[in-house]
Length: 134
Image (cartoon, rainbow, N blue to C red; front, side, top):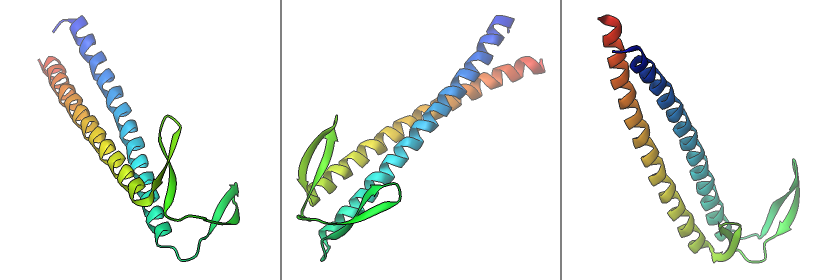
């Protein structure tokens, strides 16, 4: 293996490693979003079953006030690009479940890409190892 090819392979190893790290960061963000959607779904289910309409409303850092929900059958949902829409609790839950499925598909694609990069890294590492051995 020529020296410039060796350098190129070392560079590719570093590049692939950076890409994998970036993918892991994206996966972590996706998992946080999924958790947030799941928490929102659970909260909406609780709201739908509430007998009392009194809730705590955040007023600032570590400060809450008492508020009353006028309608526990509907919520306002951000449907994208800062556009909000009134939805029934069930429709909002369905909407969030679809979002979760989309996120899981993205997560699977990212995992597949990371695995492909790992395989390329292994292939390059084996080439480099063969050069060092011989």
